[in-house]
Amino acid sequence: MDLTTDVLIVGAGGGGAILGIALSRKGISNLVLEQAGGPPQGLRGEILQPNGQALLHQLGLLDALPAGASKPVRLFHFRKSGGTRLCTIDYEMLPAPFNRALVMWPNVVHHTILECLQQENPTGLRFQASFKSLLYEGDRIIGVQAEIDGVSLRIGAQVVVGADGPFSRVREALRVPASLHRYKDSYLVAALDSSEELQEAQYFVGQQTILGLFPAPGNKVYALYMVSSDSLEHLKASGVAALREQWKVIAPDFESLFNSFVDWNQTAYMGTGRVRAKTWVMDRAVIMGDAAHGMNPHASQGRMQAMEDAVALANVLEHCHRSQDWSCGALKPFETARRAQVTMLQRLADEEVFFWNTGNPLLAMLRDRVFRTMDANRRLQYQVLSATAGLRATAPFGWLDRFQAAGFLPDPRAGVVPVHPQPS
Picture 1 (cartoon, rainbow, N blue to C red):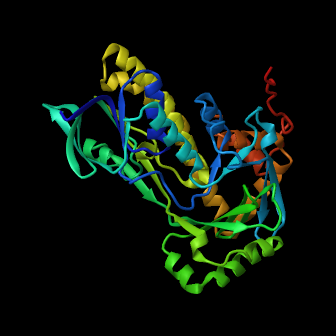
Picture 2: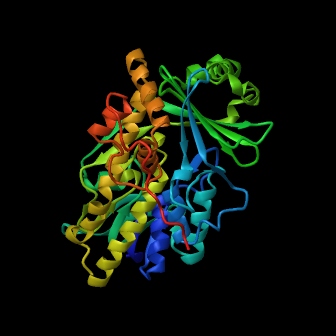
Picture 3: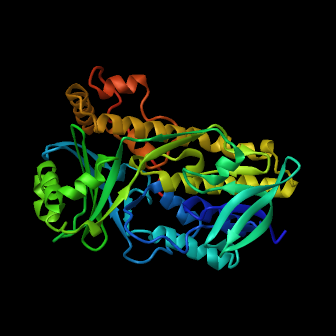
């Protein structure tokens, strides 16, 4: 072998890089291969949810984020297209200190994670490094064939981790069955300039309409606009002015904000898909993050769940390292611990997008009725918010909750919200 390590990680996204940090702190040798030439650049609106904040805090990375790179947001208002308020979700209901959503500057979380990885394991991150194939001894995985800076290398490893996204080449090499669903709608993200600092987020829903406005640091606002996945070229051909006018109809109170949209260079396109892998672990191999369970970004939990994967997997790999048992059975506790929550979040995101973006007037009427019920029902608000915030592994609504949310049954516990102890 040209190189050897205990854990070979393919992909330095939020999950792979966090895994590298966690393993290094446990004294387990690891090497992270990233095919990109360096840290990510470009526009990417990002919300750091409370579970992600707590995880970064535990790793000592939350305070390492650059000063002024985040905007705490407490209130999220849901409105009908045109402006009428339906419901307000208050992050203050969550336990302190992580009871705000943090809207981040593009890529700063990822850059901070990568910088930490390079500091703690200076030779453990290789850019311009491509996974080519798995190496076997008989039917036993012993490493990977890779190309680093144009040089072909054989890298020996006790276990190979595929953290290389929804189109994972590691998953493909392992022949893990997976369903990849491409959504008919995707997202256009735009960075807009506000004349005054906004404090509260706005979500506009209508018939086949979703437009989110999220206050960002420095008097910036991220617009998240749902568009048909095949409509980007048509949208651009219609021109910036036409899109501005569409937004003004949806959210007329923000006309001056939309006037700051003058160039397509202020935008980025986010394709959407969902991955469901049949299994995440095999003898001496694991897939994680989007490679195992990519989800609609509408869930606002993609990076968070990859980071949660990394911490859970690091703990399992520590046991494997101690026993020198890298079998499927030894790795299985990782999948057992994580699958329930990500499956719930995938389903929740699918359900929300279906109802929020419906073109059916009857379903839209039911959606608006649910929002209005939730606005007066703090228990149901909390259950949905705690799921979005990554604080629960079970679905926020059971069948009884659904009837109560639709207003068909009274809810005697409408004002009951869990009481969280304040930190000493």
